[in-house]
Length: 210
Image (cartoon, rainbow, N blue to C red; front, top):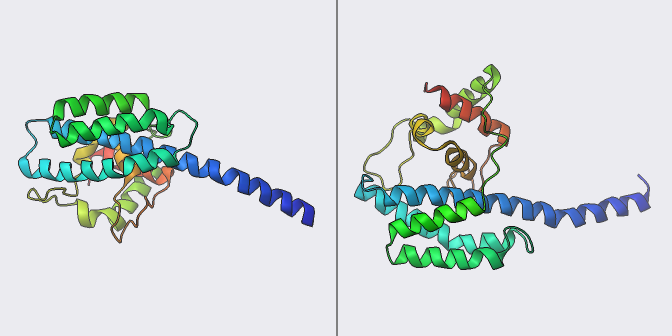
C-alpha cells in the first residue's frame, strides 16, 4: 500500500471510530432501557417475592446510576441525545427513590417506546438445526453451571433461561440476552456473544428442552 493511501485509510478509520463507538453506546442505551422496563414491571407486580423485589431494586439503582453516562456517550445530536434523555432519567430516579412503582413503570414504558431496541436480527426468530446445535453447545459450555438450578432465596438469581424464554416478552428477552451478565469472570464486563450466537441461544431456549 502506498504511503499516501495508508494515511488516507487511517484518517478514514479515525473519522469512523467515534461513529462506531456512538452506535455501540446507542445500542447499549436501548438495551438498558428495555431491561429497565422489564425490571420495573416485575417490581410493580404484587406477586414478586420480597427477596426478589430487593434484588430488583438494587439492579434498578445500578442501572439508573449509569444510564445518564450511557446517554451522553450515545451521541449528540441524535435521537438519543442527552437533551432528550437526561430529564426523563432524572424523573425516573425521582419516582424510584420515592418508591412509586406504578408511576416508575409507566415512565420506564414510555422511555422504552421512545427509544426501542432494534430486534430485527432476532425477531422473527429463524430456527435452524445449526442454530439449535450451536445454542446447545454454548449453553452446556458456558451457561449451565449458573442457570441449571435457580436459588429461590437469592435476590438476583441466575434464571431458568428456558422458563424465561416462555414467560418474557420476546423483545425484552432479546434485550436481556444482549445485556448479558456484567462483572463476573465467565462473561467479563461485556457480553461475550455475537448476535448470531445469541440468536442460536434463543433458538435453543425457545425449543424448551434443557
